[in-house]
Length: 116
Image (cartoon, rainbow, N blue to C red; front, side):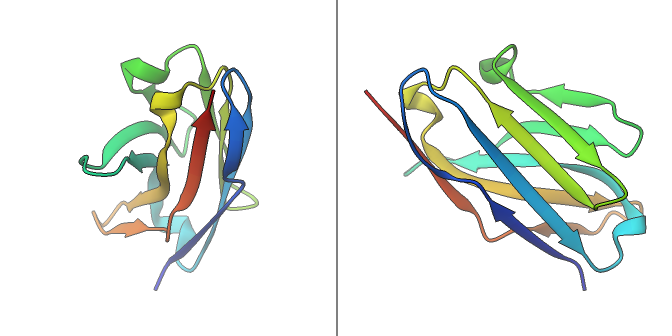
């Protein structure tokens, strides 16, 4: 069974930066896509960014130009560098992976709070 463990969340002022990390364990060689989703209180869980094993990335329009996703296949880790943070970025951020088998895995989530 795969396990995803996030770290790096916290509180930051508007305009600040945070870097999230997610370490995967288990059948990581089967992971095709990895990425990040977020969920604000009372809102649905939305995609933030995804990256393929080959490094192709995809971003939500709301974070383009501010967030950068990267992946280390040797360390089985995916990162999310978040710059120029805004209050609307406040949410619980979840690490996500999708295997070639179409199985989907989620981390436990890490809170990101941006205040003015």
